[in-house]
Image (cartoon, rainbow, N blue to C red):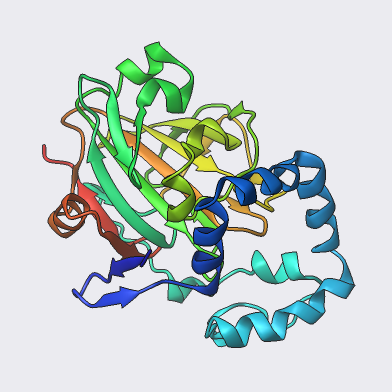
Length: 290
């Protein structure tokens, strides 16, 4: 299965990796899926996470940088005490400028995005698997507040920048944690498992002036020890760092209310074709129509 996405200038990129091919084999056979199950436990994830925080794990970094063509020159540091320190590296501010137009919705992170309408039937597609907002949030009343709005699904891969920010000025709620089983967010896995019923996720509500109340959710994945959000209820600013993921591919969700946001046309066009659009933290992904 090819994983293709499009940049904002219209360039089509083949994003298929060795990991994609491996997971296609694993999830394509019942036996390999069964053998994988023990490795998805929180205990195994915790052990792997602890190893990746040791100095010994530094040995992985050079080959990873070379394989994924990562330019360390755009980051604040070029040497790291552990693989997790490398994975959560901080980029130079000028590399991710924040669009400051108040009526513009920015991307909270780097990644590959698709956008879908949240319909009255309460179901939407994420990588060939259908979900309802209530299943995602485990809260029917909250899900109802977003009927008629939009959901952005931003998929991060291991070569992406894994810090994320707030999309607007506003008042942030506490963090709501939904316990799950760690699972890969790779699209191949989505063809077999409805991942958001399995993954640990955490969300908060951001009450803003221009965009209503935006729901921001982080979804953990295989090998991720935890979602590292920085604060509970507080006043926040657009572009302010919200948190980061530890090692592994991950996903960020935005949900917007009816008539508050319209996604950019290129994102909508690509999403209707089942193709992701490459975005960067801080750049425009939609706007307030009023």
